[in-house]
Image 1 (cartoon, one colour):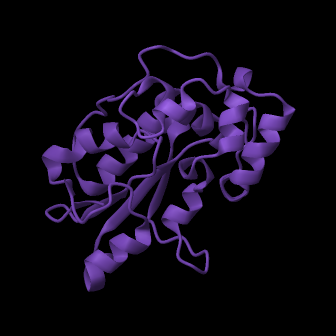
Image 2 (cartoon, helix red, strand yellow):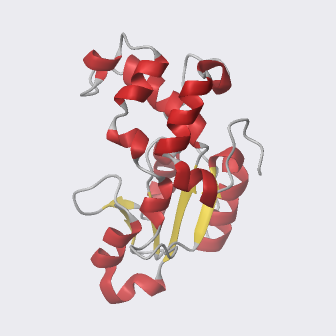
Length: 192
């Protein structure tokens, strides 16, 4: 989990949503890794902070699940040290979706809500407006910095929609239904 005790903020690092860029940009303002999990949900952050939880500004970023699936697929294929690389490197995108690693099935909503479904973060930024929302966060926590882009795909993969056929769309809808509904995502990226 990522917490700044000096500035009283915490970042819920959801996989494949520019987390490395956000962490790198905010390290000089006291953002440090605490506990064992890189991608801890807000419930773990609350348990760690205990009574101080309400004194912290907690934020996260979410991303269109259809784009996340392509990003995860491409990341695992090109990252030879990823523990699933050898299994996935020769799979088609559709086979990858059928294989469905747990990272693909984990909804952003699960990272930011309690067991009753109440949102426990103060701000949900969107990957689709990353820079603008990052600037809002910086203003809220009282820092003046620019977003440093880390792990940006060097090989620009084609438009995520080109990876999909109707079966692939249905698989992602099945796995990430909660995110699609809660954050109003659609396949084409437009809001419902």
